[in-house]
Length: 509
RNA sequence: GGCCCGUUCGUCUAGUGGACUAGGACGCUAGGUUUUCAUCCUAGAAACAGGGGUUCGAUGCCCCUACGGGCUGCCA
Image (cartoon, rainbow, N blue to C red; front, side):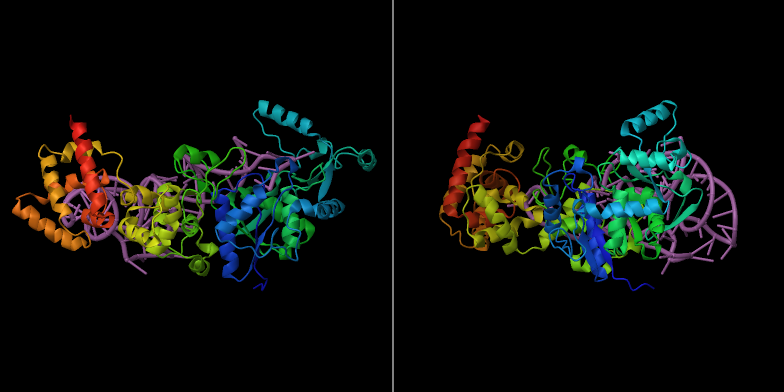
């Protein structure tokens, strides 16, 4: 067994906001690394200068920070395998491409993008697919087809060229994937991928092999969309002579849309009303984030972890530490996981219910201040205790508890219709007198008094409570009414009942 | 089209040849608790894609079909 230190990398491309699928890939890498006391590395794959988006790199870092996924090495942590930004490693790649040319594993190609586009279009018209491979490479413009002199001449003249991998012919490439087991592919079905671009930058394929090798990456854990290029990557390791230190591969199942077909994409969020990104993306076409939508970072991570992985028990709520302990790539599913926004809410609910009233009060206080309400923490904690089980998010606390802080501004029509009877105003007027004569200090004593009062006056409990609630809360919802009354106090209670008596009567006319 | 990967309740999943009357969770439905609403409790509906093998025995192994997904760029 190899005693190699576990080193994994998360290698996003800074082309926009990182979506939740990417966060999950980072999570699985992190869990795996920490489980084996290994290193978790951030490498920025910015080899495509045309797709670079300012702010994306910072966004990625902030997102993962919010998720509490700490890197051991990376663009901001540094490390002895740096630099960790591929654009800053530019000088490294050319020599490796040259090495492949020298060993006859790669060749120069002079076909212009336009020529290739035309070829693809021509093939398309005949319902065929153009692939730059061993069957055709000899008839295209490259150093395999040209004489040595011709190639030299073109190179010397400064003609643009790319370096393509000379994919081995007619061999069966057998690969091992930790999640999927053995995967076999006939090499002839893989095309001669570009390794080095005419702008002097490597493609992903070259850069990722070279960097993983140089950075001593032990395991490559990435999305399933990379599985088709695994034969190429394995062939590259072989061509370089690095097969004995080649990392082990694990291709994660994709995250699918909640409804319809296909993998989860940016647009789905707007359409179905849930965030696709971890945090708010502020540039260009902005996008909402889980953080801003009120999700707790640990709930978000927990939810993500269970999409494609589970420890085989019935436990569903895990701390990061528990996940690290229990994680294993062998227990990652093979099939794509459809994301369910409803279950995401449930996870947040679970985390919210676990918080203490004081913790929630601290989170709720700024929200209240935003509404212009200055309430003490003790009082808010009391309120939170009464309504927290009714909400999934901190911001939902407001609609469940606003009546502790301000009088209702309207009255629910349906409740008025159902509970506001002809005799109601008369009953409430009498209740008003009763209320001004009792203490509001103790909720239970209030109930005793009220019961006595209702009994002597021959009034039913429900008859008065529903209407009373309507005037105090504005609808038929909320926690125990006497508790609410005792908390807002006698003056406020009486004010609301009087206002209700006025307003609701007017409604009836 | 070609290549590759996959397929258990609507969704996330448990299941590693007999323990399966296929378990849990979300959601849904019904009942109970609650003066209201929500919570909570209880119950319920709900799945092995289809067909062939292999085996004494297939959810689990093999093959085919169907369906789903990914890739097919000088993108990653």
